[in-house]
Length: 192
Image 1: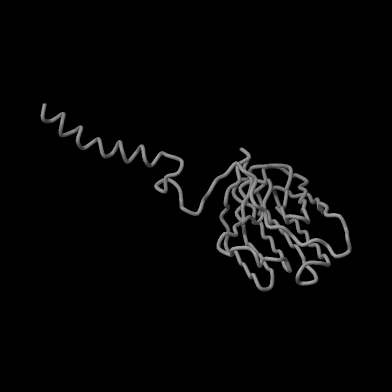
Image 2 (image 1 turned 180 degrees about the vertical axis):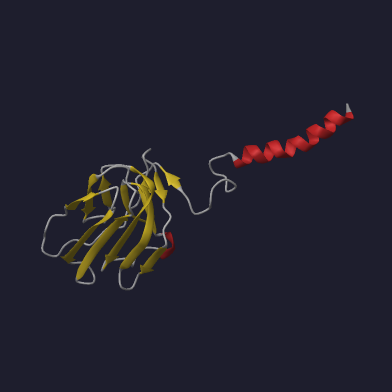
């Protein structure tokens, strides 16, 4: 009988640790950096254009092949905002064999939020590298430490992504994220 009690006493802490580690909020199973939400994020907004143009979506389409990979680039400049002008640059690079089939992809940019939508949705063999830069935007009322770059996963949840570097310059109104590891295509953008 003592043997059973001794074994039970040893097993109880492991059961507790296992139950705690398997909870969604546990830092034992996921890094502190990753957060998940079903709510629409508080996107960083872009300045209104000084020429009175309506905000719209800008698109570029390009064929990416399995054998060669490729890249899609988009750059737009606008007049307006606290710095008199602002620009948006986005580029996604595909290494060979990252896409599962030769596909025409479209990168669409919302010039109100700076949010990118890249379609069609596709899961990759590895990662595509995405870089996005916003210059000349109003960041005065934004807490620099709360800015992040996120994406919407296939379940509709907004998740922080892995990237090489996130640069924030409040004074000059610059946000730049380099080499985002995009596991599949969806919506991407800066949140606060």
